[in-house]
Image 1 (tube, rainbow, N blue to C red):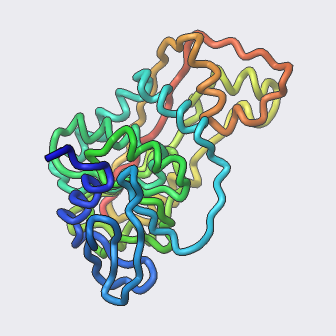
Image 2 (cartoon, rainbow, N blue to C red):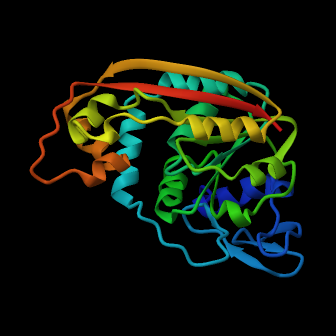
Amino acid sequence: MGALSKRALGAALMEQYITLFACPICQSSMHVYEQGRLVCAANHSFDIAKQGYVNMLTHGATSKYSKSLFESRKAIIDSGIYDAIEAKIAECITSANTVLDTGCGEGSHLARIMAEKSKGIGFGIDIAKEGIVAAARHYPQQIWCVGDLAKSPFAPSSFDAILNILSPANYDEFKRLIAPNGCVIKVVPQSGYLQELRAQLYADSSKETYSNEQIVARFRESFHKVDVERITYTVPLAKELVAALLEMTPMGWYKKDNTDILLNEITIDVEILIGEA
């Protein structure tokens, strides 16, 4: 008997954790049908792709994030510049059996965090199909969904930990999805984040510095117990990764064609917000 296809492997994993899913249209429970679809009691159906992910969008969606951008993002994350952040998150969710990464992109952060903690299952959701296609291709050990948090395909109280790493948040949905005694972890950039890049792109402008005080304040308002930890460090950046960094961050999208960016190191400066619902 030959090896299972990626679709069959993805379907088997989804079937194992099927109680965590809910139809994004009618919120009813779901089941896996013939290793090829997720189907709810009202017969709403969502295909499992040959790459092993499931598309559960209920509406058309366009994304400015391209296949090339996600390849660049994976290259940067694989280089290890976020290792300390991923290790800290893994430490915070050691006991979590079910982990949801919202705005997961191509899945590299979630896959590396789950490998670090060595137990449990990771779910990744993103509205950008290209990111989820890449995630399913590279990390078949986790469950990947194209979906919108405003109509998410998950049942209430399903996740022991919800991650929101340098991505927009939906706090109402986070509170619906988090299990009792679970936690929500949001990573936000602080004033020194990628400062070497910002200094060259935005020299002498208001964008050279910025603050996320309002985002942190909103997080504190949304959860009754909040811990905040700041992580700051500077790491070498290989010359061949400069173009990838420019492509993966919105800052780089506005670079003038005749602007040379010279970087041999980069600063990571973030706050990790840990909240209990």
